[in-house]
Amino acid sequence: MVWKILYRSDSICLTHCAIILSMATRTDIRSEQQINEIDGYLELGMQEEALARIRAALNETFISTEDFDTCVYALLQMEKPEVWRKAVEDAYGRLEHPRGDRARSAMLNYYFSVGEPSKAFRFFPRRSTKFFDAWTMMQVCLELDRLDEAKKVVRYCSGVLAATEDDFTRASMIDALASYYSRTGNWDAALKLWEEAPDEPTFQRQRLCGIVKIHLMRASEATTTGLAKVAAAQQDFDLGTEIQMPGNTAALNDDTERELKDWEREIERLMTGG
Image (cartoon, rainbow, N blue to C red; front, side, top):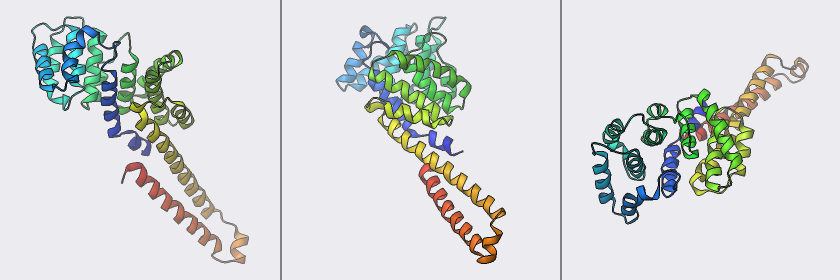
């Protein structure tokens, strides 16, 4: 269906990378002590040194959850984090049991960032959930068409949105909720959220393009409705008019159908990027 084609977009992964960068300095994900060394290298543009520190940490026989968390989020700020998959998975396997939600959060965001939503789904946090994780969880649910699980995330996002005054948090929760409502056909709710969202650069593409896509979906729905009415009219035309002006009703219907089909093709081209 068209709405599914519209939803799947490279902008999702790009947005996730932007969120990683925006969240890199936020202490609600990692403590200052844990990020100093690696983030110090990153801020100085010393990526090779940062990667060497990450490689050494991930290869430790015993790695703490804090170090694992720091390494994974640092990798997500770099190019091609997918090449580190085996190192990340091996390090996760060496974490002390039971593995908590902090480690699960890191794996959730890692797998989603490298384009593996099915694996990301397996690492949804069990108890506590950061608003940052909730945004990722919503994208995973929509990607996998798990709308049942998405409903649970909606409840959490709605609660966070009602309680927070932070623009970044509000923008991320609005984006998650609007994406869900857009996907499920509640376009009025999605538009209202996106139109009231803070002007947060990280989510600007999602918000502005989302508004346009909803209007396109409405236009597509209008052409479908219009074609159905034309088809019904062709089956039940005005016999009196046809007697007075032979062929007139059929010609009007044909003209209307032709123009609606032209609009239908053009809208579909815009929606699919064809």
